[in-house]
Each structure stands twice: as structure tokens, then as C-alpha cells.
Length: 127
Image (cartoon, rainbow, N blue to C red; front, side):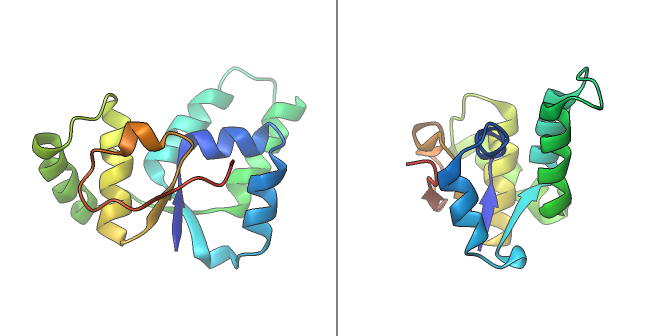
């Protein structure tokens, strides 16, 4: 079971064959995103014309992927991470906490950025 980071969605939007092929061999319920990732990705689509190819591809990606709401268990995990892990970005703390709270492997192109999170399993599909 995998939780995709925002940078993975961006790579997919940019045409990453590796990520597309990896997702294609999995069942749809084997990967998901956090509502925090949804927020970050949608923010990147803001301001794009609705008929632009980049916007259309982005929305198609979101339509295919299940979104898990950031819940109380994720909030409790994030509170613990704030004191134990020194993540550069606040959203990274939330995404890492959400993956941990659901027992998911975080798929990211930024393994180094998440390396200090105790117990977080990482994978990179864009290799």
C-alpha cells in the first residue's frame, strides 16, 4: 500500500513513464494520496486555464487517485513528528505523519527530505 507525494503527481503530470507504468500494474486501491497532497497539487493547478492540457492532465490524475482525509490519527502523528523529525517544510511533516498513521509507504522523489522520519518507509518510482 502506497501514499504518493506531491512531487510524484507532478512527475506523472509531466509524462513520467516510470510512474505511469508502476501505477498501471497496481490495483487502484493500492495507492492513494493525502488530502494535504491534494491541496498542494491543486494549488499548483490554480491560475491555469481550465482548458489547458496541463490542467486537464492534473485533474485526470486526481480523478483516478483515492484521497484520504487528514484525520485525528494523522494529526496526533504529526504532533509527535514535530518534536522528533526536523523536516524542512511543514507540509512534509503532515504528509509523512499521514503515511505513518495509515501504515503506508510514502512514494516520493525526495527521499533525502524524509530520511529523518522514524519508522517512515520510502520508495521512489521515478528511478
